[in-house]
Structure formats: structure tokens, C-alpha cells
Image 1 (cartoon, rainbow, N blue to C red):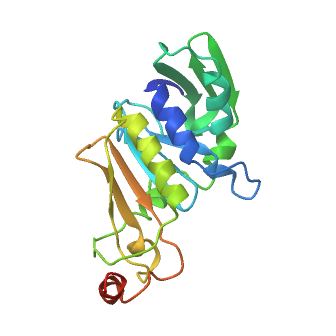
Image 2: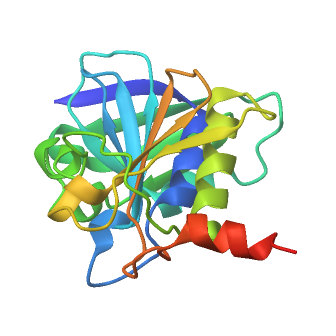
Amino acid sequence: MDYSIDIPVRVLTSLARIAGKRDTTRPYLHGVHIEPRLGWACATDGAMLLFARIEHADAAPLTVPCDAIKSATRGAGKNTHTATVTYRDEGTDVSVRVGAQAATGAGHHARRGCAGISPILRVVPSALTGEPASYDPAMLDAMQRAMREIAERPAEYMHIYANGISGPGADCAAVVRLGDCTDVLGIIMPLREAPPDGTSEFLAAFFKE
């Protein structure tokens, strides 16, 4: 069965920057996963995951390869806001069209290992502990830039709800929000090392005369 869905260009390009780099061992990370019936799209590099709300559509899920997104959006004018994605069942024969520019991608390769929502939702933490953790500043910057662009809120600040570093698997992942925006949601893993202890004592000693 053939499908066609429309999605904002800013959503595709912003999520593509969060997606994993081209890697022959994990090709399924180098793309933007879309769940039209659930109304969201997402991308992950294995350490950070970003969700964006999209219009609901009665279409099968798929992963759009980043290369197809890059090719289709290259040279697109600022007034071109919508991309049309066409594909077949199982996410094959993917084509992305932005204005007069179109690109195809091997969707079945990108989707392998990422079929359905279960592998994606498995990394969402089950609770919020508030325990401190350390995070990669470059990841935080990339996440905030992408969230601002998707939500079209260039001055909004990002909030991080930490879950420490000791939880099993995803239970130590932090939840990231952009102000009170409900159109984007981020998940980011902490660094392996523990945050420094004794912060209260450090502050007292730092300002002690």
C-alpha cells in the first residue's frame, strides 16, 4: 500500500540533526522515525532522543533516511514550509519532496531494528527522581537548538529533569522540556561519571574569607 504524509520541513531538518551519524553498524539511527497514527516523529543518536508532535494521519510508521532529508531540503527557500513524504508499507521506497526538490532513500535499511514504537519508548524513564547528574554540554546545546526550531520559540529556555546516574537502563535518563511547550519532548542520557559530591561544602569554602 502506498502512503503520503505532509510534515513541516523544520521538524524533519531539526530531528535529522539529532539523529545518529552515518554508521554501517547502526544504520537505523541515521534517520527520522515517524509514527503518523500516533502524531509524533522522533530521532536519536543513542544518547539523546527528541520527540516532536505532528499532524495525525492514517499511515504506517516509517523512518526517513537523513540523506534523503538533506538532499530534498538543500536549496529550499525560506518560504517552503512543508515536506511531502511518500512511501510503501514497511517504510520502503521513501521519497521526500520539498517544493520542486525531491530525494529518495532506502527506507527499509533505516527502519531495520527500529520497527514499531516499543524500542523507542523503552528509553523513556518511568519516574523522575531529581537526583543530580552530569550531561554533555554539546548535547544540551544541540537539543535546545532543535527544540527551539521545531517549536518556533527561539528565546525559550530548556529545562532538565534529572534522574541521577544509578538507575537501570533508561531509569537514569533525564527528561528535557522547552518551557511550557507541549510540542517537543527530549530524553538525554547522563555521562558515566558521577557528579561531584560536597557541593554545599564547596560553596561555603569558595566564598569564605
